[in-house]
Amino acid sequence: MSLDLGSLQSDYKGLKASESTSGSFLENFVRMPEGKGSVVMRFMPPAASGMFGRDKNPFYLTTALHRLNNKSIHDIREYVNGKWVGHNPIVAYIKDCWKKSEQAAPAERDRLQALYRQLKPVERYYYNVIVRSETAEDGTVKKNVGPKILSVGKTVHEIILRGILGDKEMNQPQLGDVTDSKKGYDFKLVKTIRKSGDNSFPNYEGSHFLEQSPAGDPDEWNKWTDTLHDLTALRVLKSAEELEHELMVHLGLKQESSNGGFDPSKFSTKSSDETSSVAAPEKVAVKAKVEVEDSSDDEEIADKDFLDELRRLG
Image (cartoon, one colour):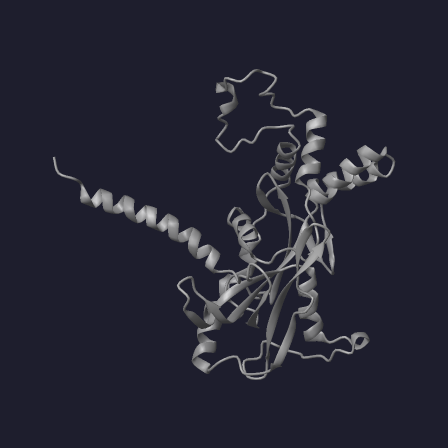
């Protein structure tokens, strides 16, 4: 019996598609150097009316992410006039933790506040940009790459808005529409490394807009504006019930049920004490202390770990 080459070809294409989907997703984002360095880019204007089926598209997207159970989960509250409004069970829980910590003994206070910092949502802002120069893995240098998605925290977002709007107190002039194709401004995202004890953290406070310059020729501009990313689609929201489930799994009060109800623990050969589905309170406390990390808003921008987490969204 001969091989069914048609069937094999179909399977092979499926494998290649799976690999390229993961790789192409990561290529959509601006990447910073592993150490200190910089990236020069041009911010793109909002997508045109009607693009992506919307009358109005944003210049940037505001979201906030919880990190738990090896996932990045969007805060389901809405961002209105600079404030997050609505109900989020994870936020409600960590606020209660902080309130209780203020009346708790030192050890319990530290545990509750560590849990708060670990689970609090961290704000992120997504922009469409053109990267002026990018070095590929084979060493070749590409010019005007994109559009790509720039993901930043509060510090860089504030620098961007301050450059556009100006700030009299900081003696910074208003640049206005930095996305203008003829009279706009490129932005230089600068990364340095800040030391804090034995730890090192990225710092972006030196980022700034450059001199006025054209974005590109008309053909380039039309191509870029026609291929912008749908920023709104990046914010995939779960239900409040799903967030409650994730929180209970994180605290050891429930098992992850991502296998369609299949519970692999019942086939375990370990003792019942070792396979208990509910973590003991002292184990939850240790987990909270071990996993808590620096929650600075100057966290890494689209480096490997963050991009891996983005792949898990939705």
